[in-house]
Length: 279
Image 1 (cartoon, one colour):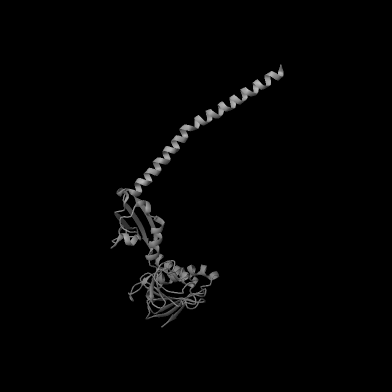
Image 2 (tube, rainbow, N blue to C red; image 1 turned 135 degrees about the horizontal axis):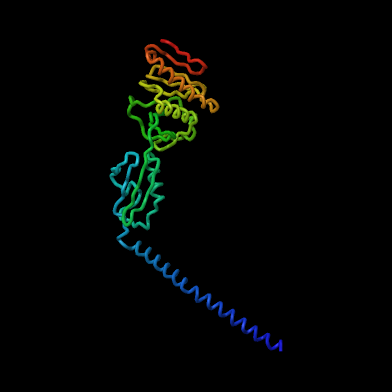
């Protein structure tokens, strides 16, 4: 009796398994049809976008975020490095960014956005000039040492950094607009110029030159003829430069009548007490 029941139970188990499998398959069919329809929809949309004139780029907008205005560009398509009437689907936004960074190094931040259906917008932020650097020519540089342009304004009220030779600046195989001068001495000079400017340390006087030719003695020239000696630019001594500039600010504040090239030859801040050399 037990033997005749075993095959029956086995047949019932097989039928139950097949039934569950069929139920699972039929249950998945709506999802499979949905994914298939979605794939066809996406594929059809892409094909439509590639062939339709609706998504052909007809305008490129260029915006200067630093000046908060539209940037007048003679040929916006050439500026972006793309051909006119190209389809949106054929445009690589990152490639546009790389193109602009390569040919327009004066811009520090470059962002490119699609504006459907037929426009590309480019947002730019300029590098700001921090000082001028004397090499083979006089160049405007930003806070990171990137060369922005040749300076043609000899009387511009901006400090000139001197004393950096090609041997001291790493990566100075060729000086060109857009290249970066990497030098610890230059970085210190730019930092000093920024501190003097933001804290208004010199009041009504001009910082005209920063001489970094001697790493053991950073020299500033104020109003052309007053020499300010700050001492070592070695890494372990850089932190003391801010303190010395504070002492210079205090002297300028308390001795305004003495801050004249006719009266002072140098101000030496390398010691605990300020040493002033008269004319």
